[in-house]
Amino acid sequence: MKRILPVLLVAAAAAVAAAGCRVRDVRTTTIRVPGLRNEACSNRIAKALARLPDSRYTNDRNDTEMCLRIEKVDFATGDLTVRYDSMKVGVRNLEDAIARAGFDTPTFPADAAAREKLPPECRGE
Image 1: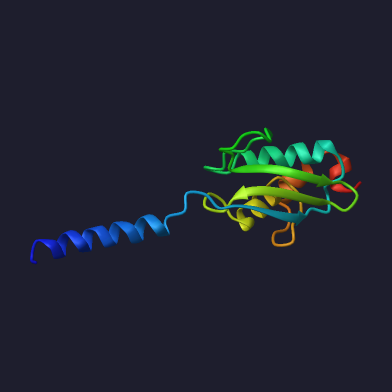
Image 2: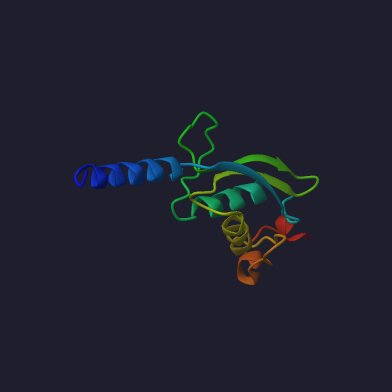
């Protein structure tokens, strides 16, 4: 009995650990970006998202290993739909990256220096 108990405890701990581990948790969110008016603006945002650490940004819709991708851009409303792996990056990380690129988001105001570097059409001029 003394030999079986440690083996059972190790097996139970391994089973719990394996059941509780998530490798990926792919989600989709829509972020309102008022300055998102054209392809040049969305390209700047895509570059900012690609710089997020461990995000593995991709445009390839067939890439099953992706961690981050822009799914849809609505220039009329300024809505940006992003598919992301929540085990790698969170919504606030996405919004912060967009703000650092010079665009306002619901949570973070645009970085002033980055906004000045945007094309006039992305600044609302």
